[in-house]
Figure 1: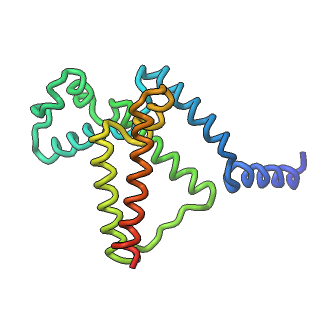
Figure 2: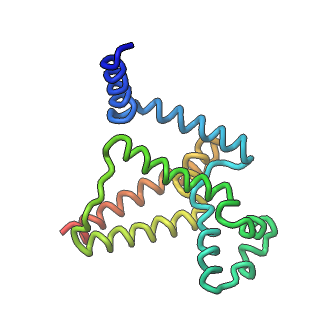
Figure 3: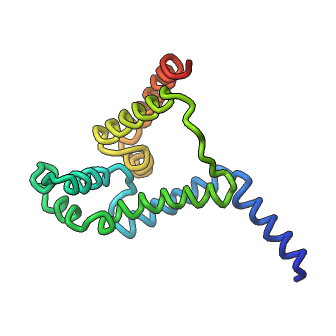
Length: 183
């Protein structure tokens, strides 16, 4: 194959797989396969926010607190995961891989951009939204992956209830964003 044909093939593949959006069914199938693989490998449903307890405890320990005395870590299983550290927790490794994968995908697609902060309202909206989402994930005992995706995939009622409330939260959040932060 000539160099020109190879270059054309690489350019075509790059455009098809990295620049152009993939069909929704491809994403759905890939998420389903990943969910099955994670369940088979770990024996637990896919979740993202559950490891935040451990991340907070690792930070608190670094700052001089004693998280092993907290009620959550009185459970020997939770304490054992805490003692394994960041890299010893499979959820931490998965979350880190998701972050790196998203960064690589945006870099390879030429879509990575560092944007300047437009206003302090933007910072306040992002911080407030993050706090509400984190609080919601912890009180719902899961995020959109663990509670919604894994919950509905296993036909659990809690996943469908979560779906209803995520729409309500999105609607309320959108209204608040427009009213207070988009001026």
